[in-house]
Length: 75
Image (cartoon, rainbow, N blue to C red; front, top):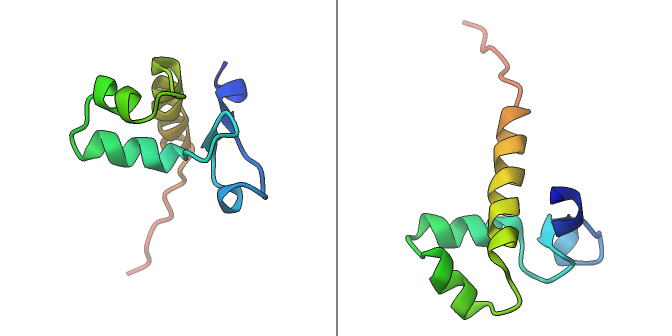
């Protein structure tokens, strides 16, 4: 399901991951949540979004974090 909700189009928002080809990026959603906005506040401000879109953004970010490779620093 996340594959259909999160889209990447080089012509839209410089290729950043967006919600369903809207101009709202995963980063935008994460910033709103990090600033303390509730799901309901986000949905009120962006009526084209759904709760599933917010969950998909969180899942996408978690998957990206899980795939992060740590490179040891040399002394």
